[in-house]
Picture (cartoon, rainbow, N blue to C red):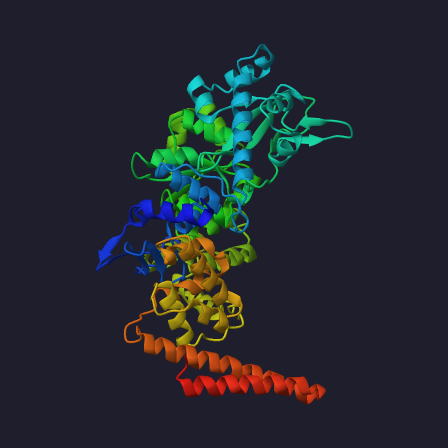
Length: 580
């Protein structure tokens, strides 16, 4: 079974309505379902799911596809991982996709790397029971981590430079594969474990696969305190959220009131130990758009709980707008100066951290507080600068009541008249024009006859001759679509339309709805098809004649006129025969 055939069977067994309902609330609208799009912020639902076609499409942002592309995009994972998740749910075993033409898909290689990392994680974890791991057990005891938490997070230990290499070689893996997984590096004469002498934190994807490791140095002779896996084929730091796999399990028990976003592994582990089990961590202090989109799948509210130092506060500021732009309600938990969540839990207790969460500041209040701290409010010039920056911040609020409340706060802090601040907000609103959108060259509009031919072929109309289409569309997107449909038909794939989203490159998915959703009413007839084919064949031949005439004018080579004469005969024949 090849890739396309397997995906076709997988899509047949997957209910796209049930799948999408896990992420958005769908409401029936006739024969389809509607919702606000999960891929962009909107108030009026423009996201449609067609259960008959097993397709979705957003009329706002243009996103569309099948169950595989939806899961891939909403979970921010690769296509093969989305297929694996759906296959697991459908109790289907992934076959070997030998000869798969699917771009960028090396399924065997990725699954082997997953297997390697899983073996490594198990071995590191088993090492904790060894007499050689006393230093790791002492550290775990010092951090007050009970056995159930050690097990939940799969903590482990790396003894030395080569032990993991010998173990994995015994399991049939090569040094080249270990290096590709980010586990080992090479000096002049030998390979070594990059995590030697470290407490190991497995980093698990939201699909449940070990994709990387973090390591905390336990010996003084190891230079860097923390080390993370480098980017690999299965690990992208910017797309990964630590403990998201646990958050996913938690959500299955019911809606999550909020997600707590931390900086480090130990912060997350300490919070889980204390019962705050919606805690996750970004892979570094700077949040990315990909991470924010993933968080949106689990809750509409995020509480930022970074360290109480300057670096943590600056990181918080960078992350706030990214979260807000992804439609999340954001609050900021203010840590005591110099403390991180782990220290607060261990030194001050669970109740202290709970109060910090309860007192978390709304996004705008936090921004104003940070602005205020950067100015001397007793200095007239500084106070004026603060007022100007504060008004810029407040005027971004969409809710007029909130905007008025914060303007009143700024007025009280600065002593300025609120009417002046309102006027200033209006000035900013009028003067600060949004940047002009990037103007991309438009592709020539597709002739309705072309769209009809493609739509009829996708819909499986018996009067369509694929040889006509390969002649009319010799290359480009249209030819790729024709070839993909032809290939699917030869394999007996039923749902050709849904398969197009899996077979064709992501960059052309936006072009598919125009064809798949084309209304054939009034044109669904062989005579109309014949007329369109005749028209398009003639147009193509006339274009060739024009090009040949230009070539003759430039070269005076008689062969161009001879070829043009042949094309004109074909044009005449098409017109006289009625096109067939």
